Each structure stands twice: as structure tokens, then as C-alpha cells.
Image (tube, rainbow, N blue to C red):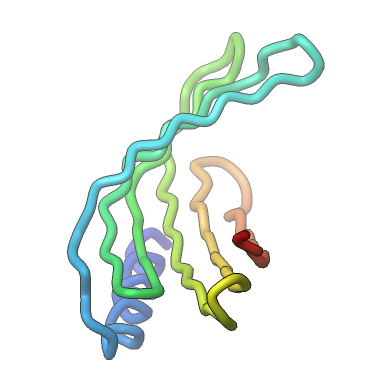
Amino acid sequence: MIKSTIAALAATTSLVSGAAIAGPYVNVEVNSSLTGSDYTSTATDLAIGWEGANWFAQGGPIVTATDGGESTTDFLGKVGGNVAFNDAVGVYGEFTVQTKEVGDNAYGVKLGTKYSF
């Protein structure tokens, strides 16, 4: 499953590479979760990515440590982009896939708009 996910990300990068590639990058992100005041988990993404003028693709391991439990290491991949309607308004989107060591894979879609003033 991980091989097919990596292949899909590579194919997506090839499809959107018509625009100039700004270059590779490394992205490290840490997200901790709490429910009320109760700590539940921390997820650390360690991604290598490529970006162009208005798109990106990145992937790498994600280590999730739950409170009182064992940590797991899975694969997380993201592709996304943005389009400016004018100088003030733009739309952005992101698609994510996360493999799971135990259980079903997780998928996500993020869509939004940004107004700058």
C-alpha cells in the first residue's frame, strides 16, 4: 500500500510539473491534541516536498504518540495548490492520505478561501 501511495504522489507531481518547480524542501510539523485539558496525542510529520508557483506535493513518515500508549509510524502524503482570483481573493485546496499500521487508511480534503486586505 505504501508503494502505491508513493507512486500516486510521484505521478501527481509529474502531472503538475508544467509550472516551474521552485524546488525541494523539508517540512517538520508537530501537532498535539487535547480534549478539554486532557492530553491525548502528538503527531510529528517528517516530510520531503516539492513546490511550484501555486502547487506542492510532500510525503514522509508520521510518528503518532498517544498518551499512555505506544507510538506508531505511518506514511503521510499531501498534494495541494492555490489559485488567485484577484489581488485580494484566492482559493486553496489540499488532499491528504495517511497509511495506518493498524486499521484503514485515512484520507482528507481541505478547501478554503483567503481574503487579504
